Amino acid sequence: MKTSIGTWAYTIGPYADKPVDFDTVCQKLSDLGYDALELGSFPPHPNPDDLPTKESRQAVVEKIKSYGLQISGIAANLWGENLVDAEDNSKYVAEFKRNCEFSVDMGIKTIRVDTVQPPTIFETVDYATAKKRVVDTWNECCDIAAEYDLAVTWEAEPGFAFNKPSEIVEILDAIQKPNFGFLYDTCHAQIMSVVGTRQNGEKEVFECQTEFLKMVGPRINHVHLIDSDNKCHQDANGEDETSSHPPFGLGILDFDKIVPAILEYHPADGWWTNDLCFWDDAWGATETCINFMNKLNEKYSA
Image (cartoon, one colour):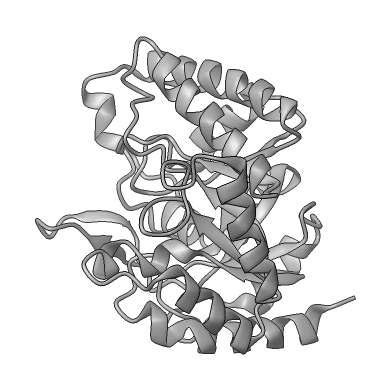
């Protein structure tokens, strides 16, 4: 598996006021031997607004190549849109299409989506309506992405609506587009399927996340590898938000169980992307994470 890391870890959360510039990120990833970066396409890193032309985008692509790196995927900046509570999805779809155009110009093959709103949204939008809006919108987005030869991958999180295992499977079953799949994040999977933080109603959990993995395995089209301490990152009010992302070795996950189970499904795009989102010292942990993934590759490579 080729190795990558999400650049959003160096621009949001603890790094929002002190983002690491893109050239510095590329240089460090190159020096450490990463194969790629996964682009968080919001300022100050490359994004559709700051790179409005094909020429400006191609210049960044060439820069990335000069460091010996590829781009494993894109986390599009759709968080300013509404999805679950939007009666009209046209604004979301238009922004999604704009990010598809950007992705193609950047040579990216996989675009990430999430349900945008927190699980508390069900207090104001009933479940059936919410599900229909998500399914209808993503079906439309998948058709758009197909025109650009892009795969769409859904990253479910405890901080977003539809975070129970059965709810996730319902959405996956309802969207049968060949270019749509599930982003399996080992940290989010732990919180959603073993801990059950931020689930509505009765908790739906398993003893091990591999049980959840079996449910979604055939639909996995992208993988994020990161440890879990069974806790959530907390927002400014001290409330649980989404999964914390401790570096490998600072959590409790048994990757000797999880990785072989993931590899049974041979994720189509061939990437392992490390995700250090919201970790206080993501920059410092970048090296330990590539070392850990390299050891996994040595152990489990065919």
